[in-house]
Image 1 (tube, rainbow, N blue to C red):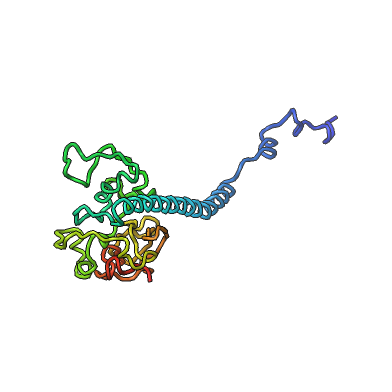
Image 2 (tube, helix red, strand yellow):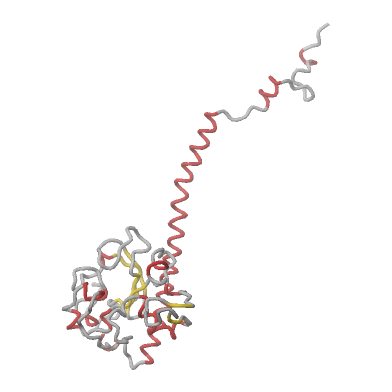
Length: 256
């Protein structure tokens, strides 16, 4: 007599031929795998941009912190030098590689001039950038000796000379003398930028001060730092959002 269906060993725990195993332990089909992959892709598309924005927001905040610490260095310098802003006679002092030497004692830096080319202020040795490089600036380490911030040339040129200067004067054969400006000459300390990021490191595209696109962090004479779009600034003498050539020099303003 054949065993009853209840007594059949076909799908018993101790007897699992191939058909039974396929039924009880079936893996994912290709369609199911594709659906899972699609779900993961959608989730990644949602989550990754959010993570990227959060990371960039943190870097932007660190950059603002850098500028606030730089503000303390400038304030200390001005207090020590009879309310005068930095001026060592270098017409290119606005560049980050140049003004850092004047402010070095106030920022705790211990960099030295290059032993190969000691007269070149654009290169250094034993230099730890610290607050001088923006964490989002991928260009500065290779191009500008890890310096991200420019100092406004309006603070070492007469306002009348600033009115006549061109963009080319800033980087090629500046014919105007360097004349120290004093804190008392600043008419709008909350609206005149002292230092700012050279590049738009936090918003695409990556452009400098001679472009109306993007936004960057600015430090103002009164000590506050903020993130400002280029189009929020007043046009400089050269028609750009360039804090070097602010109309009226230190007596003028970059923010309306």
